[in-house]
Length: 242
Ligand code: ZN
Image (cartoon, rainbow, N blue to C red):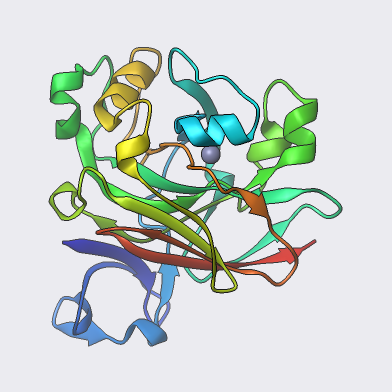
């Protein structure tokens, strides 16, 4: 099932189901063109994972970490399908296509064997990054957590719809920049849930951004970005320089 949060033409926020016929809520069916998409979850925080693909660690001249490298983005970073994200002016801002795992229940100290039980579903994410400031600071607040730095969507796909080796791709203005698959990750979804919940409580709607494959690159004013995760769909957004 593909669950979608949206604002209907009357302005009401709804959660519906999106299939080939359109978006269904109650007895109504909407054309995707007539709704405003919202991020498919309302996180209290986004737990992000650095260097979870060996080839991306290599392209950045970093070692592969021996435990998941974690950082946070706040709810201010969330943007939705179809949004225009303002990127910091005069900075080297880059895209990072990622599979995001959305949590379905409050949880702490989750055993890896039971971790899939706390997963509500998967969505696409772009972990937009300001490299200049990321390189200058230990905690990547300017580098990673600015407003709109985490577009999510367009839907929440239940885990049965997403293959374990899901293809993860990103295009800018139609040109493919990233094309890999989840089979190349260093740490799996259960391992990431177990590790992060050994330190912090995850709430319903929180998401784990599972890291980006190789091929990260610059975003410029006016670029149109598409993040595609197999089994989820295509998240689209634009960027505008502040
Ligand atoms: Zn990332």
